Image (cartoon, rainbow, N blue to C red; front, side):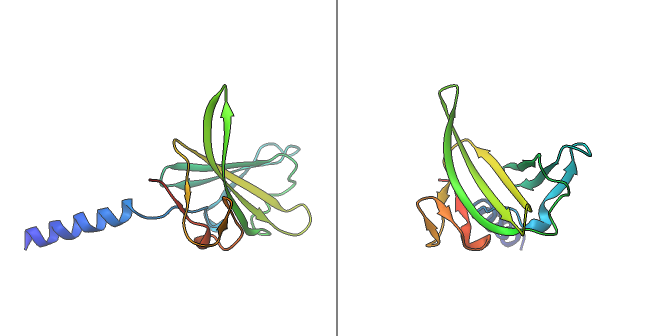
Length: 132
């Protein structure tokens, strides 16, 4: 009995580690006013740290007015070193918009057929990504 329970825990842990990652749902994003005159910052917890964003022009959090619109797997450089990140966009009417991003130590890999050239504009779960 004990060995069966232990095998179940090991199997479950293996599935958690192998899970695909994705942009946060709007409901997982928290907004904080920078100052009354200077926009909002955004944060969401994730498996590998956290998602961060900022909209210095926002006059309100916009979280009740936006929906997920796209994800992009990107690479840039910082002092000549590669920086890998995923950017997630959430848009609404007018000026309502939030961009969340998270840096990773290695490039993310798209999961599924909804990605085209490291860009996905399907739903959050269809824009999942993984790491080798």
